[in-house]
Image (cartoon, rainbow, N blue to C red; front, side, top):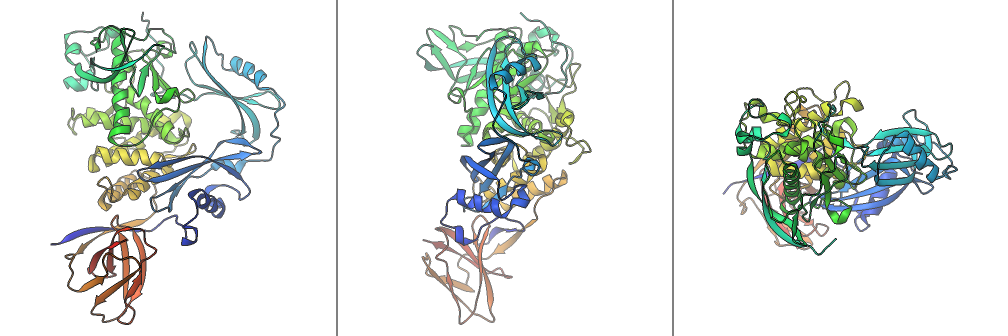
Length: 613
């Protein structure tokens, strides 16, 4: 029998010497940071607190927060990722660290006065639904280092996640910014529309899956238009009847609440919570409950897919892990957003109601995924967040196989909400390469995000949905709050490398990921994958014993000269190399972890498997 074995030969790796083998990952990470301060943008005297550790399918990621006299530095976080062998394979940079200057970290302007000033500066109106007030060291756009009160405000009548930086010494308002993640840039005019014991229950619902145009395989027009939410026989026929495997029953009423998702009403307009006596949420699009159950279904199923099917823990850190969403928010505007501070989603109503289009729902959910999986340290730089949201939505829509690859809609994002008179929508076959001339412009994040989404969807088409979803999630999990598309591309490829030999990942998959990301303009560390034919396991040219082995492995063969022996893990990673000959044919393998390995004579096809106990 002939076996094909893929060997990964890394041309770049961040690894440790064996002297650290018995120390903790934190100690390894701190040693690496001290040795690589110039590379990551820090100073050896900088102080970092370990804030979190996340074990994953690709290894373990540690997150550190830079502090000055105990005060956290805004966007001063670093993530260091270890593969399952305890080697550092990825680390983020901290651009802000290079700009820090010495300052007084004792505030002289009170947080109460700062909050009052922030309310006025952001023109907040209505009931406050969420607020934060914390002290940070902040580097301004002009490069000044300031001690600030970072104030976050959400309110019922002022949509957004308002972040206000107030100088903690002078009281000056330094910056007012809505940090919510919106699914598109434009804001057309809005349209006007009018605790008990709980039991888990099941139900049914009518939804759009993912939208009426894709389901009916038609273009926007005729009966398939918004028409101020009016329904008709064609749009009703484009609905899908689905099961709701997890809803709540309490006090004689069924509600849209699962272990993952819950409908809420925290932004204007007020439309209620859609509780009812029946478990069957059978609305048409003219009824307000349709948007609620449509968003609920897609969010709940997407969270179940990540946490149960993929086995990746990714949930809200608030509200007992349940994601809250408002199906009718943003005061009716034609936009939607994820609110990082309160970890909630809200969907607007202008033109096509956003919660009717699964692309919009899952795009906004993509922002939540990005925020959670990075330990609440996601980045919007260069459109990374927008492109990630687009990918997550398209990953689902394309899996339904409703459009052929030669049809324009195959690559359309927001097929129902956009690509019409409302707004232009986006695509996942975007032609520009990374980096564009405006890659760092905050006004171009939605356009530039298409580069990232396009790259991932090309990978998706070649290695499949589940593998691409895995490397997307595990790769993002290695990044930090200042990540760019470039650093994320390296992380996603590294996730594929770190999962070699598991979940079906092969060196061919890594090659494809590398090829597609490089095609898009990203620069990746060099490596090469070589397909090498390996003869039958009982290779007559060589025998090795004992097998299994604990300490010393003897190689028996007809030595004509000194040979170089390479030992690989079955994932394709070379773990050792040594020379052997007729008078020196014993190899010490006591330092190898337990498992199955492949011993190969370098420059030949002679190889044998062995088991290390």
